[in-house]
Amino acid sequence: MWSVLWAAVRSKAPYVTFPVAFVVGLVGYHLEWFLRGDPPPAAEEEKSISEQREERKLQEIAGKDLTKVVSLKDKLEFAPRAVLNRNRPEKS
Image 1 (cartoon, rainbow, N blue to C red):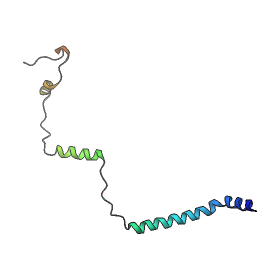
Image 2 (image 1 turned 90 degrees about the vertical axis):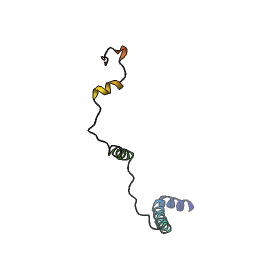
Image 3 (image 1 turned 30 degrees about the horizontal axis):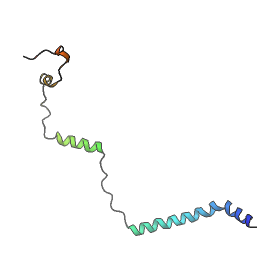
Image 4 (image 1 turned 180 degrees about the horizontal axis):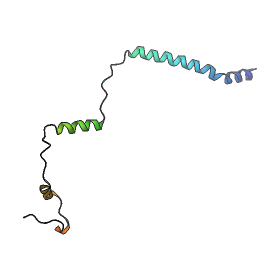
């Protein structure tokens, strides 16, 4: 008789455990909400690293005059020398 009873309990276990687990979860959820209280107001979402970088670059160039650029002739002085100085004429 016991084996028949245990077989019935095993076959009907999902139908019993799901409602019990559901009720336990529901009670736990509401108990936790009651103990913690209302959630704090949502803060402004943090910006991604790329957005922070872009803003920093914009702030850096905000006070500069972007129309003044170094001429290419002046830039040649700071370029590394070519091998054996063959590819570039000397400045006099």
